[in-house]
Structures are given as C-alpha cells and as structure tokens.
Image (cartoon, rainbow, N blue to C red; front, top):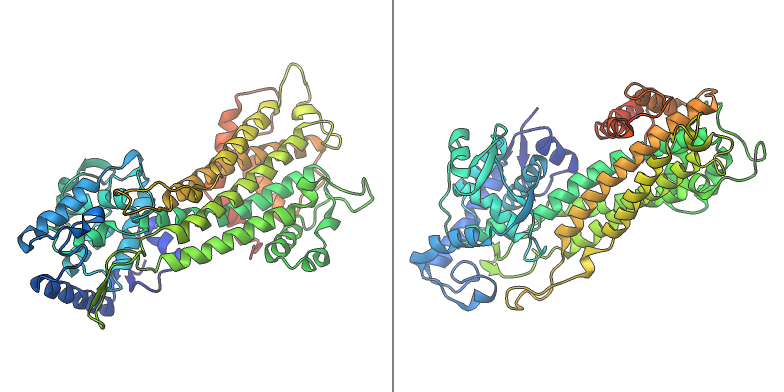
Length: 509
C-alpha cells in the first residue's frame, strides 16, 4: 500500500483506518517539514530571548505564573510527561493507540505546535514500526485535552513506560531499541506539543463512527430478516411516504429496506394478512433513519477534528505570536459523541423489540412460543431475549450524556472540562453491546424463518441468511446458546455481511 503523506489538512477517515488497522505507513509532505522547522525556529528564538510564554518559559496550569530558567527546560518538559502519566484501567487496543499517534502526527505536521522535526519523525517511526505504547483508557477529563493518556504515549517516546512490540509487552526503551526508533530528549514546548490535545477521544470516536456505519448496514439487513419472518407489510416503505417527511436518513433507509427484500415471497401487502405492522417493523425507516442522520452528523464533526490543531499554546509564525488559547477543549467532540451514543443505542433498542415479537406467540403471527417445537421440555430462545433486554438496559445507562458533567481541575484554573473522552469510550461500549443484540436478532430471525417455512428470501436477506447458517445451524433441541451468539457476533464484527451487500451493490447513503 502506498505510503500516506500527512499535511495536517487532508486526512480522511478512510485513510485513518488504513493506517490504524491496515498498517499503512506514513510520512510528511515537504511543505509540512518546512512548516515544522519554521515554527521551531520561532520557539527557539523566544526561549533565547527569555520571553515569558506559557509552556515555553513557564509552568503549566495553575503554575503558569511560575517562570522557568532556560537550563531547566529539559526537566520541565520531561516532568510534564512523567507527572501526567496517571491513567488507570485496561489499556486501549492497538488500533486506538495507533490512531492516537496518527492524529497527533497529523496535528503537529501543520506547523503550529513548535515541535522539533526529529521528535516528530520518531513519533512517525513508532507508528511505522508498530511500537504501541501501553495507554490506560481511563483518566482524561477531555480538557486540557487528553493529558493523561497522551502522556502515556509520549512516555514511550522518551524511553520510559511500557509498550507492545511484535505482540509482546516490554519496557518502552526496549521496544524503541528493538524497533530501531530513536528515543527523544524533549526540548522547549515539546511536552505540551505531545500531551495537549483531543487525539485520544478523537481516535476512539473515529473508530466508533467508522464501525457504526458498517453496523447500521448490517442492522438494516438483520431487521429485514425479522421483517420477513414476521410476514411484514412492505407498503410502509413506499418511497413517497418518506420523501414527504424531508428526512434524508429515513428516505435512504426505506429505499434500502426494499432493496434488501426485493424478490421475497415472505413479505405481504397491506390488507393481505393484516392492515398494519407494529412500530418496530412499520417505523423502521424513521427509527434507523434517525440513527443514520446522527452518524452522518458525527462523521462531519470527526472529519473536521482529525485535521485540527488542538494543542496549546499555538505558534503563529507569520505573526511571530505564541497564543495561549483553548483549542484543547473537547466540547466540540463531546457533544457529537454523546449524540453517537444515542444513535447506536436506538439500533439495539428496536432490535430487542423485534426479538421479543419473534419469540412471543402473542405477537409473532403464528410462530411457536420461543421458537421451539417442543416447548416445556425446551426453552428455545426464551433467554436470548432476556440477554438482549439486559444489554439494552445497560446501553440506556451508558447513553446518559457525559458532557453535561464537569469537575474543576488544576486549582480551578481549568474550571470547565468536557468529559469528551468518557463520551467516546461509552459510545464504543454501546456499539459493542448493540452488535451483541443484533447478533441475537440474527440468530433468532433465522430460527423463525426456518420454523415459519421459508418461501423464498429477498436479494439481500438471502445473503444474510446464508452467511448466518454457514456458522450456526437451526436449533432443534436446546443447546448452550452463548456459543451460537458468539459466532453470530463474530460474523457481524468481521464485516462479511457488509462485503456481501457490496457484492450485491446494495448501498446505504
């Protein structure tokens, strides 16, 4: 794969994923190298002139009024990193940490941060040689940026802490040595250039929004399997109905649903068996469409942030100014990530309602109770619905907005924080729960179709059914169900169902 050249302005989400998960290597454009060098020259001059500039010749946060002598610069920057490594909890997975490094490099490459070129090149070396710092996932307030987790990334750069290399966790210095990446002694401004910004929340959120688009395409197909198993009425997806609502996501989903069931002999028309379906079937374009609109909004905010300068202070070379501002504040991402949580949670919410309809003989239009032919001796899919309901309830707690909370820090110098990293992490957790609920629905819908007597599935639903049945057989007598659920979740996570839709040219815009 061709090396990705970063300029700080043109990174796409597709490029991002190609690096974080596809192991694509990166470099800098010549223009970026020149911008970095010019900004560094200004920093060095200001330091030599003993100018009082936040983060260059002063302490940090509440200590911003403490002047630092030039001979203490290295200690100031080193201590900034080591003292801020206060993260706790499980480590972030490798793709998210690689995303943090990539976004940091991209931001620094714009030439507004004052970092030395050799420091930036070592950071790039960590990415290209796959040195993955051990970064605990908890401990960020989302302003001043992601201080704690970003410091854990920088800790490896200066030869401390721990990092993974070739799948093994080791001392940071050892990982850098084995990978052949130079360890850096930080100079003026560089500690702040490395640990002040929104790259952690943005990496988590960017991966989550990428996965969300893949998930909703699969959620649509899974929903349509349930729709066919429940002899759903297609009239509710008539294009004209949705166009007059003026909601783009709704229109797109309604069109997508009809494509998925095209050619099906299991669906019905209005009045054939009944006049109306329940909301979890009839209102699917409105429900899934609203989530699609949510995801498109969040994607637009992410696309802005992955090409943003978010550290402090910021170096303006042409004006010869160093401005202490607040671009590190995570609020512009905290609100979208809280919104993303809701959009994802609703996919699970309505999925569980479809599972309930499939297993409940009072709602399933003639299917046996709990989708077993020998009820009583067998419980069938009874507890599958319990488990789905549990995850949906958990999502409702996680969907409470993190951004409405704020706890002052640094002796009230930092008196409003975003909690954006918590929002991003919760969105990622909700996505995982939602994927599990959809796995349960996929398993349940296939069972229902087998019991109903499959008359012939639609173009897209047939592909989903075939993929599902290639990993899990129809349930006869009761068996341990979590194996089946796990296989279905792995199928969804692999995106094999998305590939099947691509092959059929069934898209969702």
